[in-house]
Length: 107
Image (tube, rainbow, N blue to C red; front, side, top):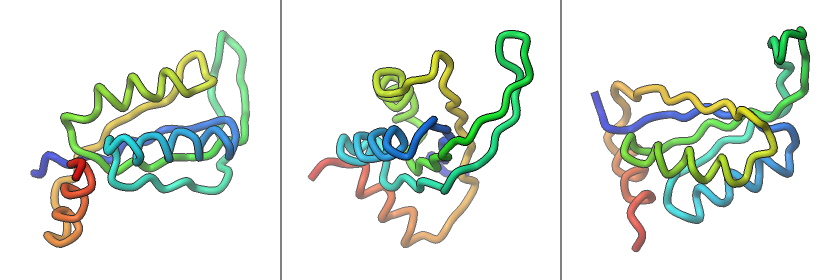
């Protein structure tokens, strides 16, 4: 098991997704953020069945950065309850994990 994680988030517009992604990488909270083209989400919100087009973020980071990412997303996000889920990276290519680690440490 590594100390690296993937954080999944969704945003309501491509502009918002890009704003969040750039801020996280700029602040060395994430090594890389993938923005996936629109996905269709189906969920229940305030008792009603909803559907929405969203942009999914896959945030590559380290476990100890999660609290700071949560705070940053709360500042930038338009949703009342933004999705933010962390998944452990059990293993990976040594060279990629080393690159990821280097990006999280300001030079």
